[in-house]
Image 1 (cartoon, rainbow, N blue to C red):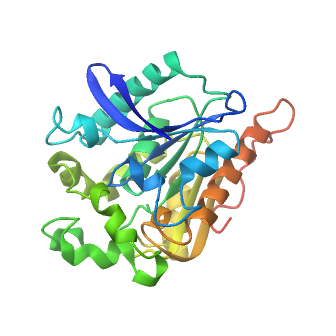
Image 2 (cartoon, rainbow, N blue to C red):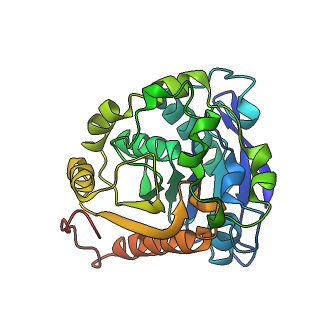
Length: 290
């Protein structure tokens, strides 16, 4: 794994890059972190096997975990962050820069967490050429009243982000400390309006999408009624909803990380198979529950 900085039309976007060592990549996984985190969220160090970057490269994929606009190297340039539409344009420019200098295999597949899932959906809605999306820790209806919290990352919200502490290896919180910080102001302000933004994006998302809800997900509603509405709003032919036991909102830092990452990459494998000539069938499956 190594650090990388991409040029997004003059904005430096930092991140972590893992590339397979035994040949060109089969495809490229773009990992987008949630609010108040960094790219290292996908490269957990508290226990062997947690890292998406390590697992993905061993399976023949390039994995590019980006610091979203307003985080990492771009924070000085964008101290108040960007809106979702602006982040979409910035990340597309960064990915174009990456494509000029690195092989991407059969294309780009996005694995995204929480706010990163909003950006993933915005990229798909804007027409970015993507194999598919795998989104964890994001719904479309809040299970809490965000207006009651002075900040979405107020310490009183810690239980919403993490869930039971036993879900995480020892030293997780010490090692994750450098990854955690405040959400940029413009991002947090817009995040509170997600329930109104999602329906407008959903009608333009046509690539395969898989949503995962952790057992102890407390930010978002994931009851049957909410999931039926969530999946029904999307224009995509292939939408899947899965549940992950023994996991909290920050799945990729917990004991369940490897299980989740394997499932995300398995969904990528399915999407690649469906792209083969004569294989894919564009029928609309049952919506919620798999």
